[in-house]
Image (cartoon, rainbow over all chains, first blue to last red; front, side):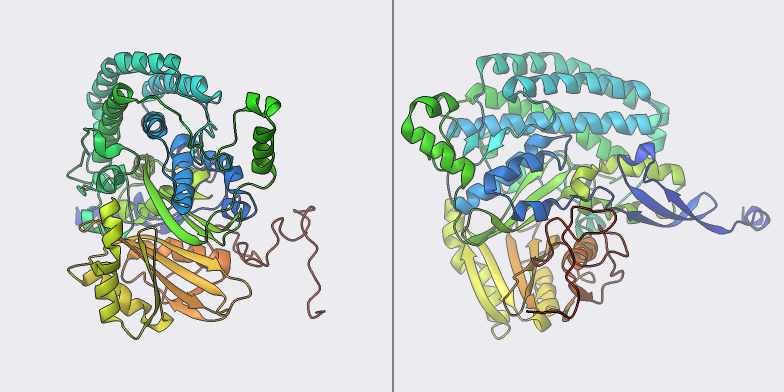
Length: 396
Length: 176
């Protein structure tokens, strides 16, 4: 072998991938230093989708910012809504109703399924297995239909609000979710066979993009990508929010920390999400789905037309918003991609003084360098897909 | 969870850290069950090292490094470190205050994951981290002027050929 290397002499070249490359999941620009087919160094260049969301937040009322969170990780908007409203509620120090907690769990898990389905589909497409994308999209559609039934929107949901949720979880929604739970397991088995039975899929993922647990932790990796390296850390289990401590579910972990393990994590998490939804549906309590605080949750629209007091509350909510106590909080959730945290500094007014979004994609992308050094160019595609970046979120 | 919140005041997060860095900690706040230590800028690297290594704390995970602009105050900026321990499952917040033109020691040597968030703080606020391996802008274009998240930076940005709706830039040197 050494003789061969002497014969074929290659020069180190710098290559640019993206920002308009179909398998960079949006607008990711990667600068690669290559020696032949081997990667010497790699640097992701982000920011093409930067919209200054944090600056916008400083200039909006607390309740006006919810729709902006939809546009972060637009593949699973519910999780973003949840992270934000939870942080504001922590600052306000209010406890939402039991029913709202269960509805939020169901909504967040549905959006995790939607997010992971697209991640798997796009990943397989990038590696040349087109059919999975079509199947994943079909299943995702079922989830999106439920969202439409729930709040009238499919992608940008703005379903959660400070103090509860916007609409009730109707019996029709419950029926639709139950139907989904009936049909999904057999279909997922089929997809698993389609992928695990695919030699190309296995060879392109197994042993590719390996990252050890220590490296992953020190680089700030979170979510399924961290668990694939064998670190059992899931915020739903370790710092339970909402009512996650009442459900029986497993946190899957991998052993090798390669792309194949990251794929396994996602698939297993979809199944665990279905388990959680099933239990939440069973225990879903009756009662109000909003806190009874008219200054935070305005009265329903029909009342506004008939009742003077309701009209005043509505007007105050829309025109002035609500005041939030002085202080600073950090609140995080386990989003499909990892730890999604919101840090709010309040100066006691109706607008946040500073709002920082700790987005998982941004932190996860840092590890691309460790994962792909010494690998081939084609592996970078698998590695990026395995981190499932969404640039609405990464670039904020 | 409520029991945990009540005990935060005398947990290791408050007591042990305060004991070890008595002179360098300027202020300690417990709010909504979260512990915040405000420390002197010079002590931040030592403190972070201590937080990561100490067997009772083991803050091995860097969650985020955040910049904040308290325009009109002195020192003007704040750098906030959010730390988490995967073994111990607790969180802590460390803050330092800096003025314009001053630098903050980088913690990338302690947690390599601080690399991008520190660059973000530099990009948005102009806070320079001393000892950072790659201190350049991350979101904005390399030749961008100004730091967008500063409070004196207009929401619509400055007017130029790409941004006709921006705010007119005040000519330099004229103050009222």
